[in-house]
Length: 366
Image 1 (cartoon, rainbow, N blue to C red):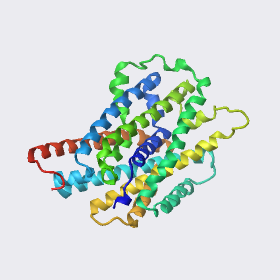
Image 2: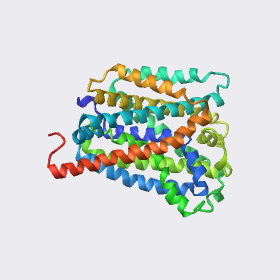
Image 3: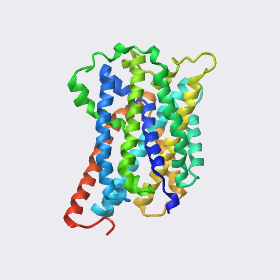
Image 4: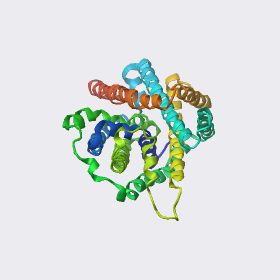
């Protein structure tokens, strides 16, 4: 089974790519609309909290390595608890991946294919994911090592290439609507770190599960930098963007980059990176969700799980009537789901497992 495991760098790339897809979506726009001029400060604030959370979660998972949240749930509360946690995470991954798919499809149709039915654009991603799902379990994760640098370079390039266009007065007043909004209400913007959800499932997939704390910290640090740079690019470039309904804010940022006549049509290159990034994210979720199904049903993983997950994502992505509805689901419902499941139920399970371990002196493998 060792050849089906992934290395530390592959695991970091996995978390970062999941996070970057949040950055490419409407989440930075949501944070800016809520925090106004204090958006950069708020992004830095929640990033610091996220790094400490990553350290804590990684440390606890390291005590139970190489077992993931489903294994720990089974040890703590039996098959019933494992099934409940597995189904909740499965619904979480599938639903919000479907919303991200709908957001991207709607944006592509509006920008490039105004006369094309959104179903046909969505089918492109579905067909591609079906093909990729035929690859070995760790092949998708290893491919992220080649995709991640291009994505990170894109975000860094957008930030620095637009510096001469920035309106630095956009960060004033520094506290925006006040300290309470920035640091208390703004705490809920922690939901931007979707990578936390996948951290719970990494230990059972790692070649070196004992390194989970190191992987967690590094991946969240890189993710934090991506979030801060993206929000900075948007708010400094678009002084009046805070209350606008612009599609894919970073796409608009690319339009202002000018490298002369030699480099042109950078927007098309950015869209290509965006599509590749989402495909990578899509396939990661398919693999993880299929593995969850396998553990919940206790039936060996097979291709049928991939098709079930892909089908559910496709069908659910068709539910929202328009782009506005899908972004509402993504920004609002996702926030509550994140805090209830990812930072609530999951962390309670980890703490309960630690207490049981100390009281019974029994290891999870017993």
